[in-house]
Length: 219
Image (tube, rainbow, N blue to C red; front, side):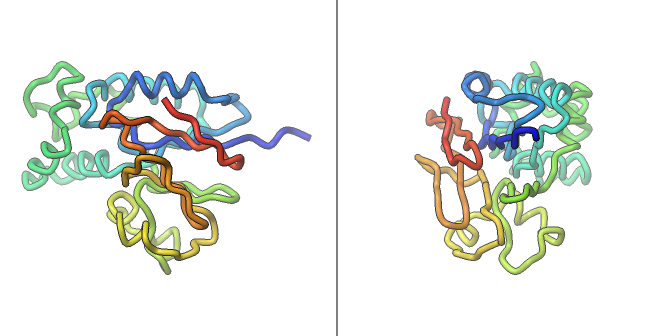
């Protein structure tokens, strides 16, 4: 009988390539047995989005079981790609899209709406991001879930952007929810949820939680 693998969920990266590289090196992760789950927000704000997406797309190619979820930063970029709505541009700039472009050696918004500034592998990685992922014992999502709504019916905006209403709710979703998006100095652990965005891009740690052991790893 084979060993039951562990799950390692990783919080918001935001272009912090060195922290991501160091964290992955510290995880007792065994490819082929264990599973990596990334909770979204790979891009913007930090200096090395291009390196982060390069590392993650390479990792996904080597390990097809890797799960990569959609964060609100990717969601907004993909919405701009889909709609071309210029009203989204100020929000993208406020969220640090210029640092993402700079990491690709681009200093204007040229190619932003078409995503032509991205290598094909990075573009495919972003377009393949999932809204949520469910294991036997846990639910994984970037920001949170709406109580009383079936998982398959959860709205993308809620999954990517919700904050206080989800965090303060004691609703039991049937499985413990692992999420990022909302920053905590230390991981949030309640009976119904675990929050692991510990503000790596703001000088704090990048965090992973190892499940089911509930062990935290940092870089």
